[in-house]
Image 1: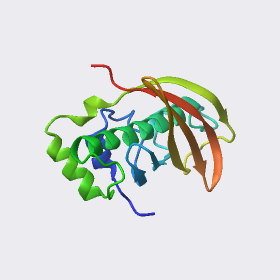
Image 2 (image 1 turned 135 degrees about the vertical axis):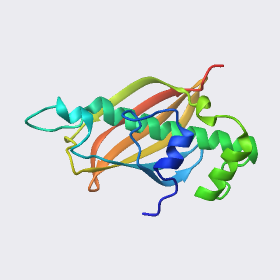
Image 3 (image 1 turned 180 degrees about the vertical axis):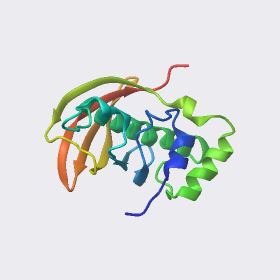
Image 4 (image 1 turned 180 degrees about the horizontal axis):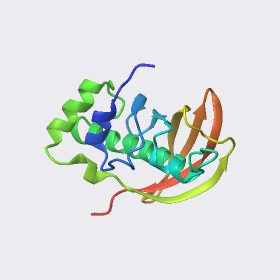
Length: 172
């Protein structure tokens, strides 16, 4: 899969930092609409120290957080495209996104909204060190200030978690 945004690019778009920045790269992106990101799960992750010492399993809440970060990235790039071009269907490339960020002139990460609710979530299979999570998000309908987002996490083409998130715009 071709990398659209790398870890440094993601860091410049999202306000999250280690150990809570969970996205490693973005491989597919339709700003404001959908995206696919990757989280490489390594044995050196700090949460494996206590979850669980004799059977390392990535906490479900962190899988949800990774999906929420992917959702935030789809949202923030959609906002960038609307601000700068008025067209969220324009060509998506690393170069275009970086140009849009440079043209914005402010810390775009301040526009990231909030996770409002987690609905109908299922954890199907444990995620362990060595797995590569493929994080998929699809923005659905708007419910006033909230947006419904269908999300899923996959390892080796098998769904390991899925559900939906409601997210809000950042209130200024």
